[in-house]
Image (cartoon, rainbow, N blue to C red; front, side):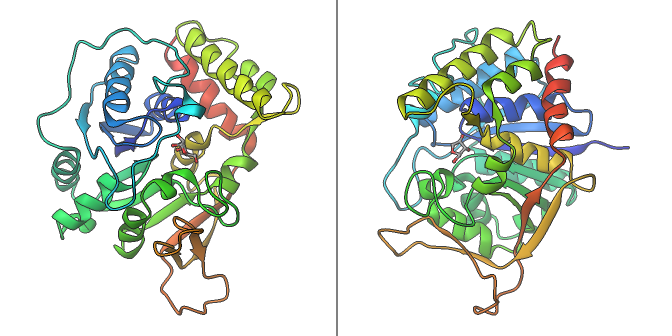
Length: 314
Ligand code: RIB
């Protein structure tokens, strides 16, 4: 069976890194490029991390640098969650390679055109790069088979009362994507929480790791330290590893992934609810379905994806 061509647009990022490991460790996908954006840490940091991950994992793919800031709202970051360097302070070997001279939106478009409509985008950060590609290249949408995104929330947010960080980071970009007509599978915050694991469960999942162990240990230790700082305790605290749920949605689509179809818009006007993904459950807006919302996935299979990907790199 031919591999799915994929571009990963991300802001690595602890959970972005785990999602990249899952996708790179799967024989289902062929990663054509990792494109970077502002988000967890600034663009320079996310790009350095993407270059370092590419070489550490031995990936044969392009790295292309994208947007340094959102389309309209002020720039934000999540360095309190991911550490100042975006990787929980873990230092990967200094990358030797560099990023493409073309910007992420040009690379994404050119790669998608080559795949004759089979290209899948896995979007793990603010959606600025994808929105800019859609706006710069009106025919881009016909070359994208589906977007699997980590972002949004069917109820409360994690960085504002109603907004999840990636969408809060660039609500206008999310609105452009939701209005584009490109099919979207959304791994929202709720779905990622449903897949969360305890620190002990995560350590068991990668217990066979050698090459990846130091990095994974650093990620878990950092998450636990953050959890303790907000009053959680090691045994009960569950780690959502948000972006890994978007990777799992792609890898388990047509297997155990359960989704529900909705018309979704993004709030861009309200100061309190900017970045909220509004699900039109009762059809009041009479909009056409534009999102497949991830409802559930087989937990064993989800955790097995991480386990197997770790083994792939040993
Ligand atoms: O809200 C979770 C999302 O925000 C994840 O993509 C994480 O990497 C952060 O960017």
